[in-house]
Image 1 (cartoon, helix red, strand yellow):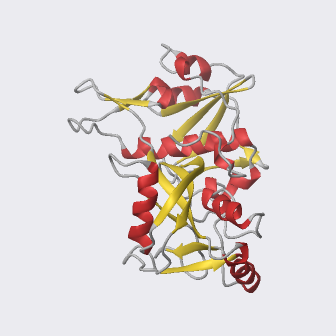
Image 2 (tube, one colour):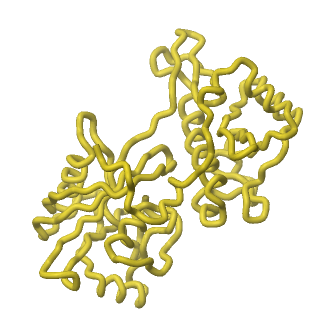
Length: 313
């Protein structure tokens, strides 16, 4: 098992003091009671977007319309407790007509840790509810239950739970002859254009350890053989439903064979190369909410100038 103590700085989506209070979710009439309590804080989430109140989430007191929504099988998600405050999210259908609605990628750097954790959870569950409205066993329509954390099939009696897909993300480093010669492997996939570069990543396959996934994905995407795979930290990445588990790995080969269709550009970068690329605008790094940014800065040894927010994981 990986060491439970992360050594990556600034994992923004992993920091929260919200008590999820999971045992309360199944209580009879639990959500209904919260929606009738004026001290409850409610957040409306429209697909993957919400509105801000200044530099904070737009929390408000519940209304009678919110209770009607819930009683007609609208999804109300119990997020938990932050201090003395009880938090609910109303998971509304996506609404592209509203210009005031912003995504998590847009607002993450403005939010405190609790607001960031609340929105991260709500966005992940919003996508799950929107895409899992039918039972995978019988095809019947499912209904939200247990404060938004379960979908129940009344046709066959089965319950279905949110999924999280584990993915590895890795700083592949070749040691060279010393620190000045040490290089990190950075690449760009087809969905990114221009100077954007990030570290490699990929999903864990069934029956595979994290470390084995790091080695396999690195070789598949770049042709590089690695060993000495070491865990550094993890954070949720709700785009739509991943847990990004970060590692550093030592490259034992340097020849590059980019995977067709997955990698468009790839190369080795020294710290001097990174400095030069950022200064000249020929290199852009992932945004600060990403674990990729933390992995690169961990290798570099200091914070780097801002890249493009909302980049790769």
